[in-house]
Length: 239
Image (tube, rainbow, N blue to C red; front, side):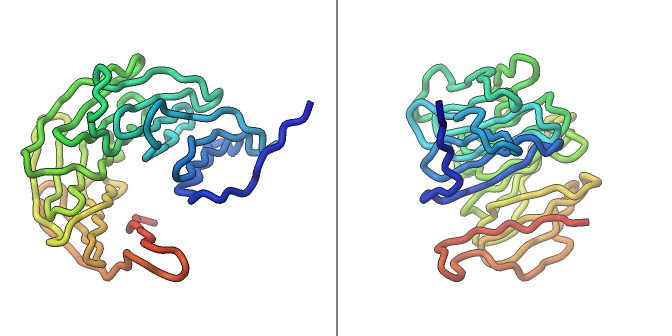
């Protein structure tokens, strides 16, 4: 019996991630279910599909034990070695739940979900999500990230100028104005004290977490380039 595995796709590949030990690959094609591969044999270990809507985000945890996927109406957590589904969260079947983005803590103990009206937190081992913070009505969360020490969160507000910071220890939510045209991607520095924000106005801003003060500004391209339309590129810390 043969199984033919396509190595090329006519879809738009959004992301490819490799497990820390190099044995598995996670691929995410726009419009298709994410796939978990055996990196050596290129055999598909599983399709990480959702029930009704297109998968918007797929991430493997840093230790390579969990995969999380989300669509607009649900979040799924998978075993990253077997592609077995661990649990599903859909807020009791709410089709308009509005799950925008999620982040996985580096120790794999916590998953945070940014939803249209607030932040939700799920903790190991069962990852039963609970709402920990309401957002103001005018704040639309886009990207969310854990700090490396897993004690802080930063939330970008998409087309809005606001940037949200949340201290998990004190449960304090603060807002700061960064890019007047909007902020779409965020990343913490290795020491958890600074944030790199990719703004829509072709700039990257370095921001102090504690005060929200802009420490530096860098030119940064985001938009259409070459033959691929609307390519979005986030600024990253590299050292």
